[in-house]
Amino acid sequence: MAFGRRKSKEQPVDEPEVAGTHRKPEEPVAVPVADDVLVADDGDGPFDIEDFDEDAAGAAEGRLDLGSVLVPLPAGAQLQVELTETGVPSAVWVVTPNGRFTIAAYAAPKTGGLWREVAGELAESLRSDGATVTIQDGRWGREVVGAATGVVRFIGVDGYRWMIRCVVNGSSETIDALTEEAREALLDTVIRRGDTPLPVRTPLPVELPEPMASQLRDAAAAQGAAGGQPVTEPAPDTVSEEGEQTPTERRSASGSAMQQLRSTGG
Image (cartoon, rainbow, N blue to C red):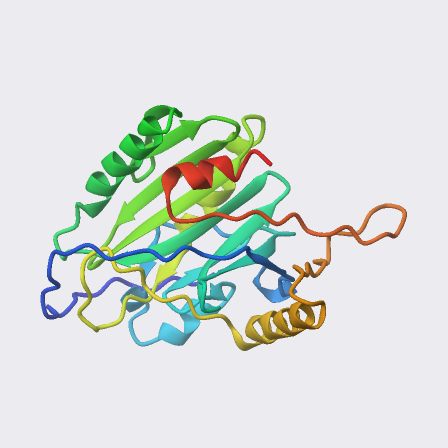
């Protein structure tokens, strides 16, 4: 996979230092993954879209383009799309046999340093809800790990006017392997920040590729036809040895640290 060369960035308008808000999502919808994006290569990322110089279109090669983030996927991964109450995609979870993780981008100051502040808040939120919390050193700095019925790890990366927050959800038995999968994805993730001034901590929008958006609309229509009952669409790998389709597990995960931790236990 080709990487671009970092170039100097023009100074955009300063963003005001105010906090954004998160909306509580509904249950995620499972979506199959296209074979042509099932790849994760090593690199020295995450990258800014401007790192690709004049070949910005090349950033989408081998990555799932979600608008604000372009993410490489482990082989055999499946996807769960998380929606807001109004049906707008708010996050896409990468599901592997070890658990699941999501990579999201937020508006941040030009000077960086937002992750250190956010990490402290996440740790305090977990502790106040009774979780066991540790702060560990990772490739990009501190990582917040909370343990209760499951394990959640928060990995953050500060960039130029953006911050990445990667949430890793798994069991105590699989969290290490899952964390490595998430780190490999982060190494080759690309951020498309855009030039629009935004309040600090504003989530950068998630945009689904049209094939995924179409599948999501079909699933919503099927749910409506079923009288409002949740409908889970099997992904390619959710077939048992006897040939029976097995529904993909559906877990809710809101923005709070403790709710994301609890979602690993069921």
